[in-house]
Length: 113
Length: 116
Image (cartoon, helix red, strand yellow):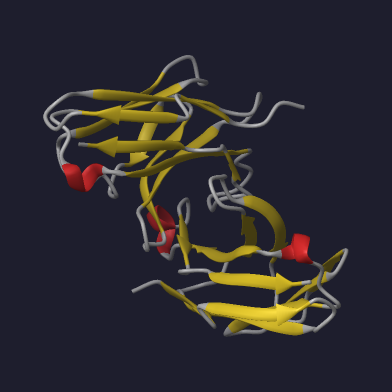
């Protein structure tokens, strides 16, 4: 069964304190891994797509990396405005399943000033 | 350009009534998706459209749920005889499909449905 597990469920950091969020997945034939940010009361906002092990992408204070079994979202010197829930998702396995995204439960990140 | 739009943003209904939720995808996006996000739950897939056809309806939780897409654009998700467990945020997403697996999906703001 296709599965995405994110850890930790919640993370509280002080402004400027760097950390990493984890996303591990089990899916037959990875065809991309997606990171989204979701603010309360809003839809998920696309951040990154990673396609192959070893790939890295950066945007401002965020860097996403991918291995064969997991992805990390590194946040460097975060600011309070980085507070949000971060979601990880992969396309489902098989031909039929590959059109839908399977999401993890998310990591709720809080950055205290 | 304009993103995915959904209406209404909030809907409160009484148990047993029917509701219709609307999604307007990004112009030019051929694929359209519906997901549901319940309190404390992750996003769960409901249905996917390619053009006007729905190759995958596997996520619809019961036959009270249906969806259609017309003109390769706007989609409507209909829930008949609503139940309290239908209360959730219903999210729509669209993508440019270039391969047989999904490309990046862009989400709308969602419709928060409350069934009393």
